[in-house]
Image 1 (tube, rainbow, N blue to C red):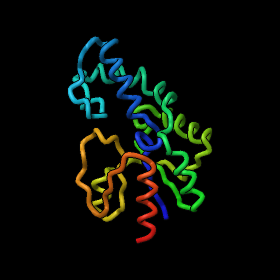
Image 2: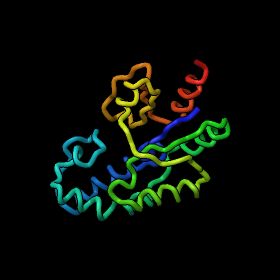
Image 3: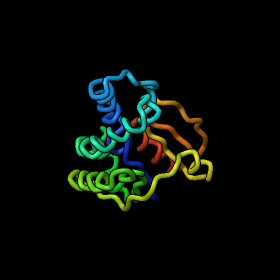
Image 4: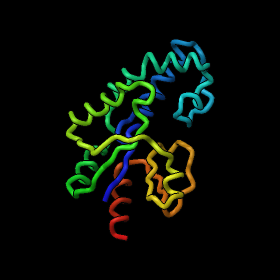
Amino acid sequence: MKIEIDIDGVILDYESVLKTYGDLYDFIEIKKDGIINRNEHYLRNRYDWTDEERMNFINKYFLELSMKTPLILGAKDVIDMLQKEEIKLIIISAIGGMIEEMKDVAIEKFEKEGIYLINIIGSDVCKKLSSNGIKTIYFRDKEMKVLEQNENLKEVSNWGEIYRYIKEMQIK
């Protein structure tokens, strides 16, 4: 079995880190109260920043924050279990799309943790994957907006749920 996994917000807790430091940047550096949607994790949808303010944040903090970002609780344990069961894990991610070095930081972090993944390929959209019959697990904070689930799209919020769902798919 092959499983494709996204990096940001699934293996690495980057979305939480971005929200925290984005809020600090918004309040302290640009002196705004620019949060327009607390439940959004995309910068352009979370804050009322100008393009210049957003790009300043990206250029100043993205690489530094990627180095600080921890693994999501349970990620390493479940990845280790899946790999022992000879399940091939392929990374799908847009990481490095804006700052190329972020991809290298992620690979280095995985290697330090003993996580060895097959490849990192470009990202796709869960709805598109699931509508094409591909079993898709969408991992996110429960506070985020909800996707309409179907037989090919399962929404989860922790690595225990991911492992359970994968095992259920193997039984079917």
